[in-house]
Each structure stands twice: as C-alpha cells, then as structure tokens.
Image 1 (tube, one colour):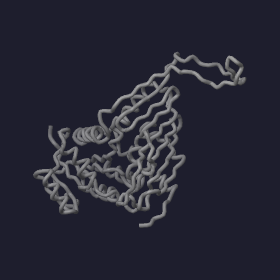
Image 2: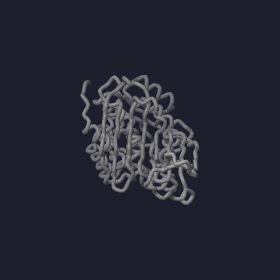
Image 3: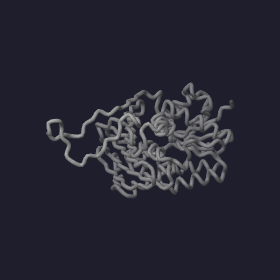
Image 4: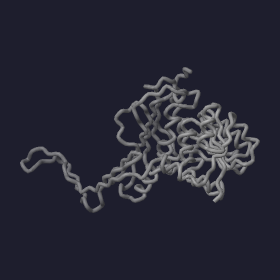
Amino acid sequence: MKKLNVAVIGQGRSGKDIHGLYFRGEKNVYYNVKYVVDKDEYRRGVAEEIYPGCVTFSDYRDLFALEDVDLVVNSSYSECHYPITEDLLLHGFNVLVEKPFARTRYECDRLINIAKEKGLTLAVFQQSNLAPIYTFAREVISSGKLGEIKQVNVRFNGFSRRWDWQTLQKKVAGGLYNTGPHPVGIGLGLIDFDPDYKVVYSRLDTLLTSGDSDDLAKIIIEAPGKPLVDIEVTSADAYSGYNLKLIGTRGTYKSTTLKYEMTYIVDGENPERPVIEESLEDGDRNPAYCREDLVKHVESGDFPGDAFSLGTPSFYEHLYYSITEGREMPVTAEMAREVISVIETAHAHNPLPVKY
C-alpha cells in the first residue's frame, strides 16, 4: 500500500493534537507527513522533531511549487478555512479542511464547485458522524426497538469560560461555529440530511465568555415526516447529563460520547388499556391515579471509543480510498455545507453585537 504524502497547515490544537495524533499513531498506515506549515518558528521546530524528515514552511503558498503533495490538511484559524482552501483547490491540491467548513453556504458551494471542476477530493473533518455516538444511534433507530422516533435531542454542553480567539465573531468562532458542527451534523444525519429541512427556531446568546460570539445556542429543525431535532450548544450548563437522546413511540435512548442506555417496551407485553372517561377510583371508591408497572426492557453499554479515537481513523481511512480509488466519502462536503447552512441561519436570525 502506497502511503500518501501529506502537508499539514497549522500546528495548533487541531493540527498537532488531533490530526497529528492520528498521523503519529499506529492506526495510520495510509499517510506520511512530509510537509508542515506554521507561521511560528518554535512550532515549526517541534514539527521537525515529531515528524522526522519533514520540511517546514512559514507560508502555505510555498506548497505551490511542490509536486509530491497528495493531500493538504487545512487546520488553520477558522476564518482562514475558506480562503486557504480555495487557494489550494485552485492550485490543484486535494484538501481536508477542518470544521467549520466556511462561514456561509455560498462559500461552501464555491469550494465544492471548484473541487468538482478540477476533479479534486474535498473533505470536511466532520468525524463525529463516523463515531459510535452517531453510528450506534442509527443502528438503534433501524432496529425498531424504540418504535417510530419522534424527537432527537443533541446536547454538546459544559460549564466553562473561554477568552481566546474562539470567542470572536471576526474569527468565525463562538460555540456554534466551533463545537456546533458536531451536534448539528449528528442531528441532520439522524434525519438523513433531508433536503426539505427547515430551521424553525433558533437563539444565540453570550453568557460566560469574554468575547462577542455565542456560548449559548438553541436550534430546532423540522423536516416532513421526520423527527423533531432539538440542538443545544452551550458552555453555561453545569447539569447536562447526556449528549444524544432519541424519543420514540415505544421507548427512549440516551448516550454520552462514551456510553448509552435505553428503555423500551415490546408489542404484546403490555396490552392496550381501554380509555375510561369517568374519574378513576380505587377499591374503596377513593379517587385514584393511572398507575401500572409496565413490562420494560433496559439495555446499556460502553462504546469502544469516541470521535477522536475511532472517528478520526475511520475518517482518514475513507479519505485515503476517496483519493486513491475515487470512492465517495460517507460524510460528504455537501453534508458539511448543510451544517454550515444551519449555523449561518441561526446567526442571521440572532445577530450579536460585534465588539472586537
């Protein structure tokens, strides 16, 4: 198997500690990091140590003179995702761009069209849609154990403060652009990225962060014949006990990124109760309440990994065969575009004051 030569742009938390962790790990049998780009001299020195033999640059445009780059990973600042990816595609490179894909749907369409015109692979790092939190939920839905799914709740919440660039609107940052692509991607995926979906409600606010972007986002999505999707992303919630919940006609499922539990009933085990129009009474003619012990089934378990330990290797494996054999990615750039469309809509409906 021929390894693909990779150039990584950016050695921040994503480039070094997410993508880089995969590239340096034993699960990587597909790629060789040959070039690294970062403006910071110290970070370039670190890259030369952790990727022996790699060549480093301070400007990504130095890659344009090279002919042996099979893939460029764009893990630059979020506001640079669009212009750098556009430049790379126009110069003939296959690109994996970190989330968020871009700021607007128009920018996403522009990048998708360039890649198609030039016959290039364009991927967006939405690895949560390959992680067990998502793939196992789809299995549960398909099993029918919960009956017809009526509502999907996705929560990526916590309780913390930020004061870095990820709190600034001018950096295409804030909770919804930064964390939001994961829950929005999961929510849209669980309604099959229905082309007729609509954002029927959204709210953005700033509570704890020091910047001017959101750290509280609420989005509700509807699509014909599909479950209601309720998405929440906030760093001001100290009591969020799950990341994903499925509510069906026969039961409920909930999970974090690492474990799940579901409770459901089985047809025939709880005979239907006829409706009684009069007030209920007990044996002594006292007022009574509807009470019964349903025959319930409870299942629980642990996932073997999360979006980083399992989702990332799976994403890169699919990407390898997309580049080498033309296979379609299970998470396409068009899907990532819809994620941005939802986020852009929420921002359009809830303009926050620009302070920086």
